[in-house]
Structures are given as C-alpha cells and as structure tokens.
Amino acid sequence: MMKKKELNKLTKVQVIKNLDKMKKDLFNLRFQKVNSQIANPAQINETKKTIARLKTLLKGKLNA
Image 1 (cartoon, rainbow, N blue to C red):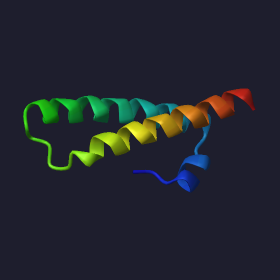
Image 2: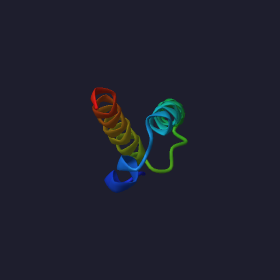
Image 3: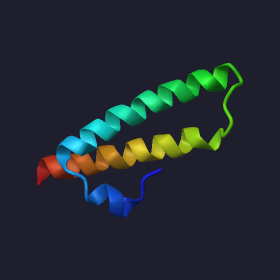
Image 4: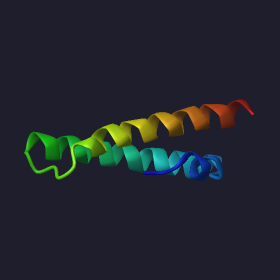
C-alpha cells in the first residue's frame, strides 16, 4: 500500500483518483473473500486503512 510520505506528495485530483481505485479494489477483495479466493486476507484491512488515509488527506486539502 501507499506510505504516508507518498500520500502527502499527491495533488487533490490524484487523491480522488486513488480513492476511487481503492474503493474498487476493496469491492473486489470482498467478492474474493466470499468466494474463498483471496490469497491475503490482511489486504482488506490495509485497503480500508489506505482509504481512510486518503479521505483524511482529501479533507485537509479541501480546507487548505
């Protein structure tokens, strides 16, 4: 996943694009979990945390 330093370098547009991508990834991971096809279950939590980081960063950029 993305590190905090990498996230801080992103522009507002890039954050929004990454957020959409992560949401799609999470959706696909959930389907894989239901079908017992997921290789790394911890990836779900990492994706959720990255989404939260992106949302926090986006909120900060909107207020700045």
